[in-house]
Length: 209
Image 1 (cartoon, rainbow, N blue to C red):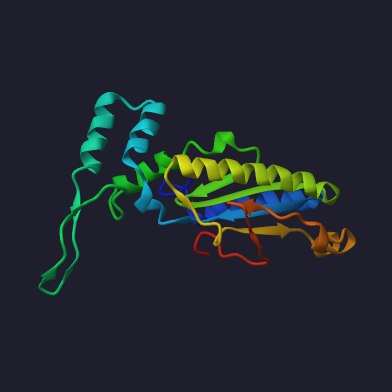
Image 2: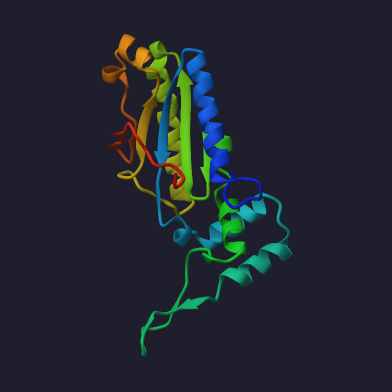
């Protein structure tokens, strides 16, 4: 997890991913990668789950109670000129634009990686999963990545985060020579989220780049 931490920028995450892919290419390996998209991740954070996760990482009762006071009891309304909507209680989400909100979100999503059998980079609500393999074992590689996506999907449900299957994409990264020699345009298996096959893309805008 790198988002909103000192010394951890989008560039540092991208450099790590790039270096991993280049090392794989030098070993004659391809990289199968999935870019996961969560819909309105900051707005769907569930308070009860926040407290459970804070407890799991060792926060004291007093610290958790302080966070409880910070998150709960908030209200919001919309005002246009002199007209104001009804005031409603805020039931979910961490305050965006605050100092503590991003910290709480990092803690909220920090328990994903130990359950994955692939490389995983998280930057705020962007999650990138990938595995390397020799071309002849691309099906085994895809099976492992599919298993990781299933873990991600189940984790998202437990964390009250909405994994958007239509915006989540998969990509094969390789050299033109390996692509041509091994006929990788026809043998790369599908990856699925919520029973929907992910779109295979050749380009993807990651982390706002």
